[in-house]
Image 1 (cartoon, rainbow, N blue to C red):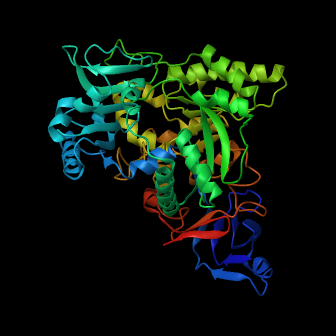
Image 2: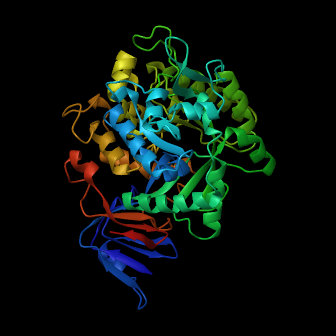
Image 3: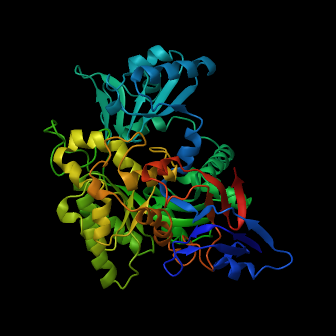
Length: 527
């Protein structure tokens, strides 16, 4: 048994919200409460740790993360720069140390933040004339490539746009080096995939990085290779993140044939929901909207799946015990999936099926008429607080007055919507304290856009926000009686903080860093 005492413990359990000590044995919490009561349980073989009045919280879960992509991105060029010139300089620097003819990969550029706008293939050609270059944007919904990469993938001026994708072209109709949505696959499919062993190694490195941030669980939305690597890590007893693993749409039939259902697995690796996309993203202006983008009268974005197709897929999934997690950013996309889920609830009722814990991923822009419907239909809103502050100026510019109906976290909670929080990493940093700060203040770390934040009526309390990183994700994974709280019988996953997030100024939340992280009753990281 291990006892931690002289601590300020926020349990996320309404029965005992705050405690002074807790005891752990066999990977589970066996007692939590007053210091004297818990210390009375000590045995001769007990490890007793005095915590010096520090704060203890449940381990935090990132409810939307791309684990393999994040792990591998730690080895890529960081393209999240203030200028296009700096991004190109970094490409040129990487070219100096990369053998000719090999791929140079990067991530994070955002043309909306660059005064010079999006780049061109010719600019990458000049920076890395002897390499193939592929740089994913911050949103992961478009990519910037050089001529060598275009040529290697067979893309030329005559190549037609693929379904659900667009090949960027300049005013004269020639390809310009920017690929949108499904068009990115034309290049991605020829980039050599890492081996399972390389992916395992990258995930192990990322796992430790996440522990240092206080993340003990993730809901992962990468594909087969990530799942294979996670299974190997679990088999080798090296996986110490609680991973809820989504099923990509292309694997639905295989999953059904195998009899996989949402919730199958262990406490470390568990089958999640079927992942689908209804639209693109705000950054490249491909999110599906009910009305055109500001100053783009012919652009309604891109709708990939309408309500009828979503319902058809949903029936198949629900009939086989698989829940859904559907990407929807624009108000049109959100409306389509809400309509599909409404029909799916009726189908579940008539077929006497279990009402599965279906989700919408992002829920960024919601028409006012749809804002109450998630709660009514028991749809989980899986949102990313950092998107609000990262996207605020872009939303104001391209959605105009509709920005008031975007990232409406407090509105959703006022309707009793179940909400879970994540980062969409590597789109945003997986540091949950950056997300907590964004949700509570609606500000960036530098204080922008001002002391009250962006649409301050949507600010959340710290307690509401922490629920989105603890009890909410546990519910979404079907683990509400096992995880997300520091209560007797629950998994012993927790983090230790020197500062108390409940007493510091909200603007300081983004500076918090754990001093230790525990998973399954064992310290996996200590600073």
